[in-house]
Image (cartoon, rainbow, N blue to C red; front, side, top):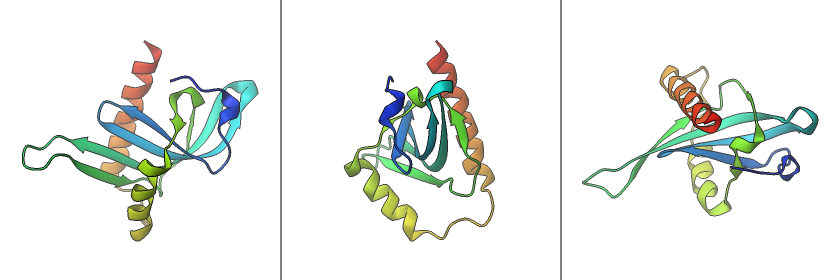
Length: 120
C-alpha cells in the first residue's frame, strides 16, 4: 500500500489488511520527517469462510491496548460504509477494563505477519 504521508489526519480511521484480517485504527499523528505514524488500534476483524454461513467475522476490541508506531504506508483510509457498522457494534460494547490476552495475541501475530509481508 502506498499513501502520501500527508493524506492522514488526526482522528481519521484507517485500515490495514493481511489475508482475511482487518485492523482498524485511529490516526493520532503522522510525523512526515521520520515517516512514522502514531495509531490507536480500535478493532481487529477476522473473516472466516464458513460452509454454513457465507462469512462470519470475529470482532476483537483493542481499545484498552497500547498504541502503535509504524509506517503510515501500511494503512489506507477506511471507507465509511465498511467501518461505520463495525464502529456501531464497537460503541455498543462496554470498553474493556483490562487487556484481553486473546485479542492482543492476535494483534501481535497480525502485526508480525503484516510487517514481514511489507518488507518483502
